[in-house]
Length: 222
Image (tube, rainbow, N blue to C red; front, side, top):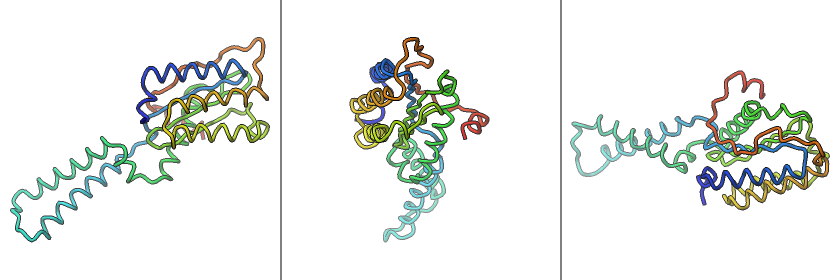
């Protein structure tokens, strides 16, 4: 199963239902946001274009059989374009030329921006939680508002976060991811039980919009 499964309508409905089940146990508000990628990686496409052009040039220069160099500049340009298009079209190729550090930084930055843009800090009890999934970066970032105290939640909270990360990054399973989301319910319920007058302040729908946050929003998130 690939990350594309998470963007299909059945998956979106299943994630919405999982969030609803969590919030029936706790006053905390959970939002799941999944993005195809959290940054621009055009440089990786450029590097693949250069690499393919270089290989072609080496063939022309060192192959024992002579070649006609008349159209070499055009052929190199075509090779560059082909390498760039292949990189942009196939995630594993593009990811090969993007460092893990850059992917982590972009995922963290995008998660902070989404936290602001989705208004997760606007709940009355400041108990909003963002589960941000960056597909290209293979990262799951969980950001909790100031009303959530991870130390009070204890090891169970850390275990829940590890389940989320493993379900997406290692297993790539929607079923396991849904189970990991639902595992947040009992953990949060101990410190943040659902109140009798609890209101659903944030949408349960999965957010999968492209990252369009303004520089001001990103600065506020930092």
